[in-house]
Length: 437
Image (tube, rainbow, N blue to C red; front, side, top):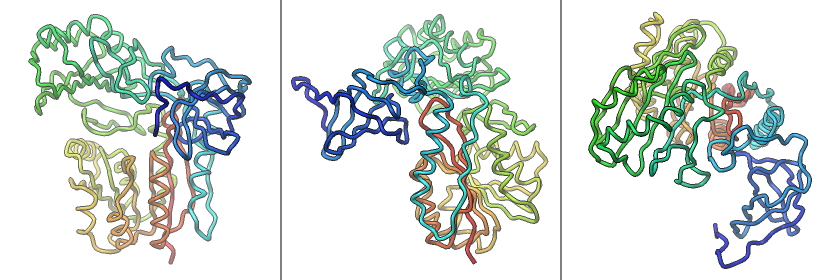
């Protein structure tokens, strides 16, 4: 991508029509030669004067210089740093408009799946809490300022609260931006590291963990961190420093999912939307089926799906590479009384070859954004489960993997999107595939 040199006047395209939103939330327009122009914070149907900031042969990136005609779905963003902070992309769009956009995105991606039989795409399950839902946020403390990264930058946008974050985390952010920052500096002997990561993790019931990640090697006094417990909601402080881990107080939280308490340690994965946990699990259970099913669960985490699936299955084997998550899962399975469930501490690619074909009737996988590997797809085809439930947070890698599974003898039956990330361009998608006999 070529940036416009400072000495060269940027091209301004007048009255550019925004045709639609693309995945990630930017508006798509085309100039008079048909070249694609990507414009963040512009909405479909709007016309705007657009300033071109970066240009390449096939496309360009611009910014709104002036809105000529605004969309009726446009609203005033509630966050004062929206547009500068890189966390949200859609606060300027009504929540109804966000749901419509995400439905369209799912249809566009799933159209890339070519198979003989048609499949159903359900409307997105919207969030009961479009704001104040995030259970985890990652802050950066940089040059005495605390905040989130600026869009496409490693510079910090200072914040005192975040409208998509649960209230207990905002209480800690307010503390850190006030006296907490001085207390933290005192623990470092008076001078903060140049760049310090601070992750806040909380629950809807109010407990918060503060996780500090410092790789600078500066001096640090763990004892002085006790002052952080003056904030009522802080249950634990964890420091990762010089490849060592120090903990004061608790190093895990308990989350309520379908009436069961799940232990989640500070490095274990948990879905960040407090109001969507139950809806997501119910969605998986609704498509799981019943009977003497033998489940294999890949990227099983702390047992969020393992436990409810085990209640109607003959057996379930979970595979998880993160040892901390495996520890949590084993505690959770024991507490739930799951005697037909087993966790394997291993990567997916290493674990799958140990299983014989037809060992499992059903497969659930919830991989990271990168999706699954070609080796995993090959092993899944060898194991030949009757049904696959694929949960993904990235439509592009989801479609890539499903297209490969279709070539291995599977077909898509139905698709269910979930809005786990309101105000952003991201979403979660559940896909059901069945084996063709």
